Image (cartoon, rainbow, N blue to C red):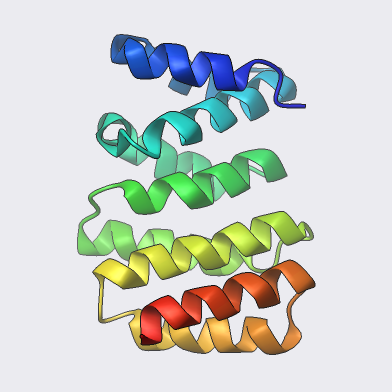
Amino acid sequence: MIGRSDQVAAMVAEAPELFSELIAGLWSEDPLVRMRAADAAEKVTRKKGELLQPYKGELLGLMAETEQQELRWHLAAMVPRLALNPKQRDLATALLVGYLEDRSSIVKTFALQGLADLAQDDPSIRPGVIEILRQATRTGTAAMKARGRKLLGRLEG
């Protein structure tokens, strides 16, 4: 299902000026193109998170409006990589909490990861995120329980 997104990610990592074309793919009419563009963008920005910064507003908007699960889980991973002001961080946090109601276990698990990533940099939201993680370890899917335990160890350690 990922097609050639690994190759595309490697190409964009070598030629970051192509990143804008990759981001444009997140709004493609074709859901398969959106999914693959999101996968490649997420992979590139694991090491080059600064490439996302010019698209902060658009990504937060897309995060709020998309129903496509593949976009949701990749956005849940990418948005915490952004330098967010307090208002944007509150929005991202609220959107990720909303993603915990998604029908997809993968979206829910990535939302937990995104919340923990935000809480790592923002002590003011850490207690609430820790409580969400504790609840996920009690009542979530197997993937959520496992990820929740790992993230709790990181945040509480």
